[in-house]
Structure formats: structure tokens, C-alpha cells
Image (spheres, rainbow, N blue to C red):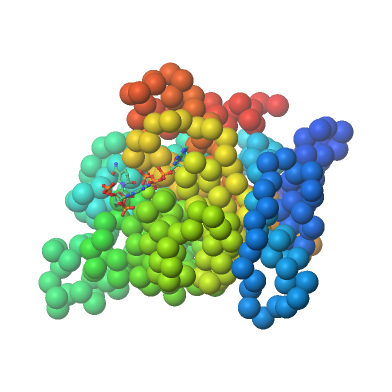
Length: 392
Ligand SMILES: NC(=O)C1=CN([C@@H]2O[C@H](COP(=O)(O)OP(=O)(O)OC[C@H]3O[C@@H](n4cnc5c(N)ncnc54)[C@H](OP(=O)(O)O)[C@@H]3O)[C@@H](O)[C@H]2O)[C@@H](O)CC1
Ligand SMILES: Nc1ncnc2c1ncn2[C@@H]1O[C@H](COP(=O)(O)OP(=O)(O)OP(=O)(O)O)[C@@H](O)[C@H]1O
Ligand SMILES: [Mg+2]
């Protein structure tokens, strides 16, 4: 699915006719306009709040102030419209792989649940193939959770590699992953990866390779630990998506901005963080998921569930990977002028956030206090179906 093959084209054109007369079409226009960096903020956008951005260096006077105001406005995304717009049709002519091939780089001795949650969520949202690249210890366990996943037991931790073998093992690991890399539409780095230094060195090489191959990369969990200490891995990469939780965000802010998280100036700080790292998209997870691509700040605050069981961020990272690949494909297939293109990473984050929240809400309705991550995954399908039915 890496290149637009035309499969997406039929549906948007068909939908275009349908949508022209529908309220969805108008909502969509508002949404797309609101996401465009050059658009003035529409004063009537529901749910938006203003915040004042500390001025980016290099600009001056009223222009700087105007840009700052526009940039720091937080829009509530029309997330359902985004999901509808970027989700590809279930076209009978399409072949396996066209709805997305995702890979999760994660899974070690301690953590097997996180990479499983991310990879299976990618499938449940609608990707055709989902791979996991993990350590040998984790591989059998992850395979046993699900026969749907393609599991590569190729990563190594320090304890299993002699010092004099490190260089050769590291290059072998990169060669193994590189064989597959071009086929992936998006990768997720970090769920359950662990923090072993040798393993993280190998994953750094994988990330560099993915970047050279222009593969969108969602960085989560221990992947965020890795990049926080090695910002060059994502600096200036517009296809990198960082999905920090409260604690991961705090570490990122401390490292990059050299200060503490400030709730009073939250959106300005997020924008500044994006600018300092340069080009990346950040989704700050929490009560609302706040998404910034350095140009706009958008949030999804649809209520999900009051249960905070571990693993919900992993569902999110797998879902964002699929939606980002769909958004990228949708945008490329629709031949919008480059300057009008909405960032696919932003759309992917908005859609992933909404779907997780809807699924969490349905799972909580059914399971109440006993809701766990597996229950939420079960509702990903219904949540998407409610927004964007398979048959229409
Ligand atoms: N089933 C599995 O296999 C799962 C595996 N997972 C994997 O685990 C790995 C590590 O991920 P992580 O999130 O535990 O690590 P990190 O962010 O360093 O937290 C470390 C400490 O920070 C704190 N803390 C955390 N969040 C906070 C908050 N919101 N607000 C305030 N404090 C907060 C908290 O400290 P405590 O409260 O315990 O003192 C926590 O102990 C990673 O690979 C991930 O993918 C998970 O995906 C879950 C499912
Ligand atoms: N305070 C909150 N109120 C409502 N929803 C929340 C809240 N915090 C997180 N969420 C929801 O849970 C999702 C995952 O965020 P969370 O902070 O749990 O990630 P995480 O710590 O990385 O998860 P994981 O346990 O998978 O590592 C968010 O996208 C959001 O939908
Ligand atoms: Mg996490």
C-alpha cells in the first residue's frame, strides 16, 4: 500500500458525489479548513479555546502575534468526519495488503502484552497484515496469543550477546528487518520494547532505516525513552508521531525544553516542543488527547472510559499506525495541491484517538470495573462500524 494504486480513487470520487449533497461534506470542508495551517481560525468553531503562544524566534511584531494566536488555538476535531473520510472502502477488487501492512517493534522478556495489543489492534481496525519484531523470549508467547500475527524473533538483549559479537549481531538484525521494511505502510516503535542498551542501539538503526525509506513511524512507550535520549532519531522527520503519556511527556519536556510541564500554557508548550524537535507530530495523551504537528493544535475529548487499565496506549499506537497509513493514501490519491494537504499524521492521530475512546466507552458499558484492555480491543470493530459501516 506504500504507493497509491488507484484502489482508493474509485471510492473518493464515488463518495464525492454522495457527499456533495450531505451535511457530512460541509462538516468535512470545515474540518479540513480548520486543519490547514494557513487558514485563519474560524471564530465559531465549537470547543475551541484560545491560548497565547510564546513567540517563535525569527518573526516579529503583529505577524508574530497573529501566527502565535492562530497556532495556539486548540480545535476540537470533527473526529468522526475524519474517520469517515480516510477509512478506505471494502472494495472487492482490492487485494491483500492494500488496506495496510503494519509492523510493531517491541516485545521483550518483561513485556509481551504491549506489542500484542498494538499489533492486534492494527488488524482489528482494518489492516491486512500485522507483524511484530521482538526478542526470542517474547516471540513464542506473542505467537501463542494470536495466530493472526506474524512474529519475527530477531531482537537480542545484552545478556544473550557476547561483547565481541555485538557488531555482527547488530548488523544481522538490521539486515533482517530491512528485508521487510519497504513493505510496511507504518511502523510502531516501542510498545513493550524494554530498555536494554544493546537492544535500543539496534532499534535506533531500525528507526534510521525506516526514516530513509520514508515509512511513517509511531513512537510510543520505551521508544519514547529511546528518542528522549537521542532526539536526532526523530528531529525534522514529518513522518514521526510521538504518543507520550503524562509521564513520558514530562520527560520529553524536561529534556527538550529544559523546564517542567506547565498546565497553564499547555498548548503553547506543546507547540514549542514540536518546533524544538522539528517537524514531528506529537499526541499528548490524557483526559483529552491533544495533537500538534507544529502548525495546528487539535484535540479529541470524546469521553472514553473511567478505567485506566494498562494497555490502552498500546491500542492507540496500533490504531494510529493504520489510520495514518490510510490518511496518507487518501491524501495522495486525491491529488490536492501540496500546500492544501492536511498532515496525514494529524488525521491518523485524531482517528485513532476517537476509535480507542469509543471502544473504551462500549467496553466499560459492558464490563464496568472489570474492563481490561482485551475487552476494549473487542469493541474496535463495532466502534468503526458505528461511524463508517462496512456496507453502504
Ligand atoms: N501488558 C503489558 O505488557 C504492558 C506493557 N507496557 C509497557 O511497559 C513499558 C513501560 O511503560 P510505562 O508506561 O509503565 O513506563 P513509564 O511511562 O516509564 O512509567 C514508569 C512509571 O512512571 C509513572 N507513570 C506512568 N504513567 C504515569 C502517569 N500517567 N502519571 C503519573 N505517573 C505515571 C509510574 O510510576 P508509579 O506511579 O508506579 O510510581 C510508572 O511506574 C513500555 O514498554 C510499555 O509499552 C504498557 O504499555 C502497559 C501494558
Ligand atoms: N485522564 C484520562 N481521562 C480519560 N481518558 C484518558 C485519560 N488518560 C488517558 N486516557 C485515555 O487512554 C488513552 C491512553 O492513554 P494512557 O495515558 O493510558 O497511555 P499509556 O500510559 O501509554 O498506556 P499504556 O498502559 O498502554 O502504556 C488515551 O489516548 C486516552 O484515550
Ligand atoms: Mg504506553
